[in-house]
Image 1 (spheres, rainbow, N blue to C red):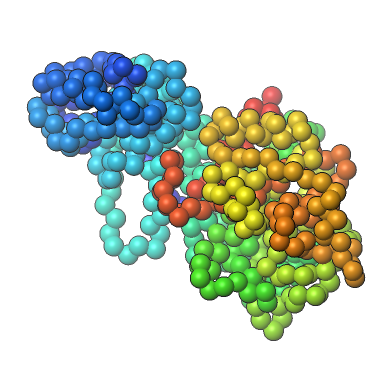
Image 2 (cartoon, rainbow, N blue to C red):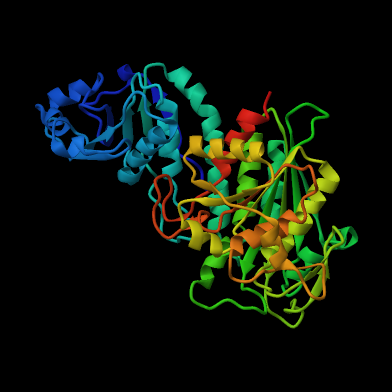
Length: 489
């Protein structure tokens, strides 16, 4: 997998700013206030730094934004970058500041002067999150990046604060790698194998093959994958870091490794992006990796349904009726509304087997959520106000956009079928809500539940603050925060 940058935390005595040949980043507060040894750079550059800090351009910067002096006289540095960041900056602003440094550095060595800043660890986390590139299929030789040094007041203390953040970054990178992989590489077999390898981290990993799924009665999930040569699977990952008898939080992910739409085939334009239709499963995998790496004191189970939705002589047809594990029959109106069929069976299985304290599912489920919220926010649906409020608070702290959407019986009524218990689509109006109501049907009364429609946030066509173009890893940080704040004693 793509490895996060190794960041060294050192004291000011360990670096000679005059002879450092890479890039130097300085944190400057409102009004251009800087700390030592940044003042030494001002002397070396004969006041050029002071002139920049007093400029109108610096005054216009928002927290986390930057300007730079290229090839400053009096120094060997390639550039001196000045990042606007106050001492009272939020976690999100601190991460954005670190990301601004990573975005500008290329492959150069970089020294970040963060002496005395209370958010030094979060700045480093932001740097690491943005310093990502998916190069697994590039044949040209890759230039090794230069060293990354954070100059801080108490290196050992900051390194200790950064350690759990490093685990989160690795989880995010694992998710991004999975979502970025092409479908001829990330088959259901390959995906399951990558998850099974996390047994080495202390996760209990179990792979349920098609014969086991048939015995369990997962007709909804199996119907989606019956047109593909790749076998359908469910992978169960358990992290048992909490009290022995405490029920786990369950995370459920949609893992459609490629979605043609099946017989209800999608248009050719943009279909190549459907390699990301396993983004929900990718996020669940990244969270489970993070929990294992940081030895979380909580019980969490991650379950992902892995299928491929292909048209063939054995593919599911519009008009077919399938029986879910719950026992409800589903009329398949549109084979391109397949993710909810996968999730229905995995949601039911998670509740039957693990009796979770709460359950969160993630899926690149509907284009309708992009129409509603664009690419800034994930759609959040829930049957429990307190559970949802805790999730939204975690998302706000992590700076990951999330917006609660409604549920209601009027939307559920749109799913009534003439020949079965329910149909899998309810028409164009409120498409993301009717999809959520379909899933709601497979959540037992009394089980706190959140559905996250990440169709607009899992993969972007341009850079975001903390990620380059492509997979974002949305949700790994928020779910880890939720677990840290609400499930670890």
